[in-house]
Image 1: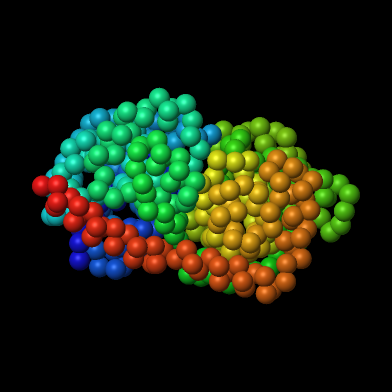
Image 2 (image 1 turned 45 degrees about the horizontal axis):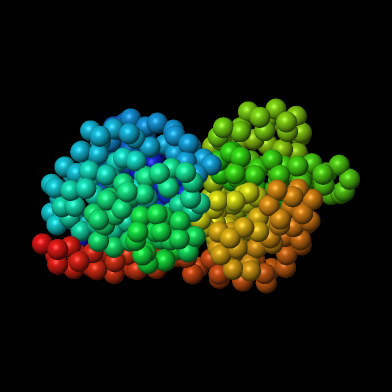
Length: 366
């Protein structure tokens, strides 16, 4: 058994792929016999989380623009010093930082480099901030003994900016969790939109596709929107009076898992800047047909098992939904088998090897 400190720079009270990775990894690491602490921004004493790991919430959060989204980070240097103190007090830990260059929770730990450190790069899509902060990224990268990335796009974006050469792994998830509930096919074809309601996620395109279909074809489609974000009010104003569209707000994990087993098709209509389409694989594991934008991160994840549509093209999304609704059971079964390749248990096994490598490299620097 080893001591692992997982660090997520984003509040675990907000929905996001990085947060889900950190939580799922904490559960599997504990199940595999590791002593795990999970550290993220947020007020102490927040809502309980679905993990047996010891959770530390450090620093007040602030939503800042990042990669077309708003990231719930902390800019508190006191929180960064508190994390470093947790690392220094732990018995021989490995520190695993998700998005290690995101401000500022892990920065003091990286600059001090007092324990073996592994970093996981999630972000794809460089911007001006990445170019302006290259010297800072290179300095922080010296505190990492091993670097991994969730996709080739993430490895290229941040790996190049920080001057590191990541091992390209994958986003993992607990595939069996997505089939705990019985599959319930709805009487009316139900399209599921899942995630933050922001410009780059393209929810308006999928909603327009459903409106187009229902205006001229039968049987009608229904849409369930699970998510919240900066576009929520605008989307409700535009589509909220349509009786076929239900805005249910941000979903907890239990609600999300339930809808993945009750919908007809998941639609992921992002316009770009997606490093990896984990939500596609989650739907496949839940035996749900998938429609996804034809963008690099989603193509990589789908592996030919989703119906792809041109990003931003409502007519093509409508066409793709119709094709997905007609998918035979054999196609759904093949997609489920494809999703199993991204098992979190398998991923954690890879990280255990990286933890050993980080220990060896850290010891060699002493």
